[in-house]
Image 1 (tube, rainbow, N blue to C red):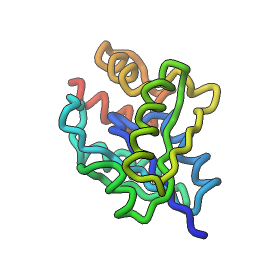
Image 2 (image 1 turned 120 degrees about the vertical axis):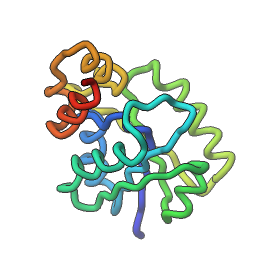
Image 3 (image 1 turned 180 degrees about the horizontal axis):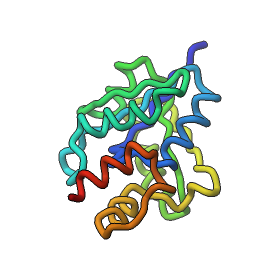
Image 4 (image 1 turned 90 degrees about the horizontal axis):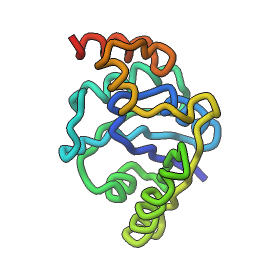
Length: 159
C-alpha cells in the first residue's frame, strides 16, 4: 500500500524544526507532500511562491518528498493528492488543544483521512517561525534555526 502523508502549514519561513519533521516522516511514509498553504488570513513575511521555493530548496535532497502550494480546504487537497494521512507537528502541550480540534474536524469532514502527530527532535522543540521572524527583525542571528538559504532570504527581507 502506497501511503502518502501531507504536512500542511504556512512555512513562513520553513525552519529546522519543520525540516526535521519532514526528514523523519520520509522514513515512515512512501511519500511526504509538504503542502504550503496560501492562507490569506495570515499576514506572511514571504509570499506564497517564495515560501514554496524556499521549502523546495531546503528539502530538495530528501527522497520521497515534494513541495506543493494549495489554497483550498485541506481535506479536499489531501484527497486531490491521493493522501491518506495529515501530518501535524506538536512542539508543546500548548499546541495540542488546537491540533486536537483540527484533527477532530478533519475526521468529520473526511473520515478516510487520518491525522498523525509527530514531535520535533529535542533540539528543535523550541523553534517557531514566529520567533525566527522576530529574531531576524531585531537583527539577531538565525543561522542555528533555519537553513542558510532561509537565513539569507530573511536578511534580504528585513532590509
